[in-house]
Image (tube, rainbow, N blue to C red; front, side, top):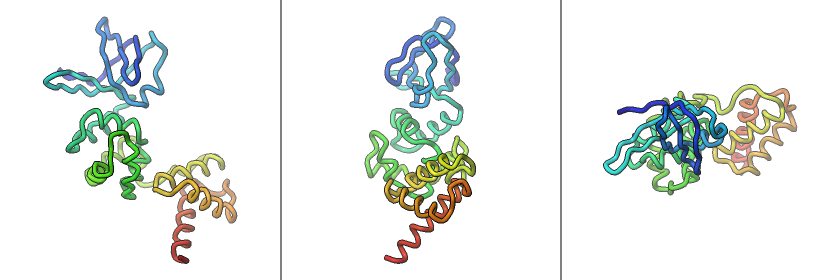
Length: 210
């Protein structure tokens, strides 16, 4: 029996587990952080895209807010040593956009922020994820650009700083680089992508001076 989607009434929530009434049947579903953050009120309708796991000792349902999120989960659990629990932790801890950026920049330290992932596991995951970069890119992340090319001046600055943090720079480094760029270019004259590129050039210029 395959269960790919559930639509029902939310009866209970406990941590990352929800109980849904579907036509009189109650389904316990372990859900992602995205689902937890957007849960309706008890008694309201909840739609989940699900992945069904059958083990010798249990039958488990995992629920996601979108098909793309479920696709990421399925990509993770195909990796040797990554089970559903760790796959769900990866989904819940890493934004797909930031994950793609981390994989492209070989930022292993970002993966170690996921609960249950140590340095050795992160290094192995990084190798495997590089082989699945196309899947990761199409599952909710922008494939080539670090950030989007639009937004308010404040949003542009914040978005650019987040992108630099995703690339592995420290908060102080990111802030200083952006401030340096904004001394020469008004924030409202740049897209976030342009601001990131110019900030990266400041890092390159500093490294040449050292």
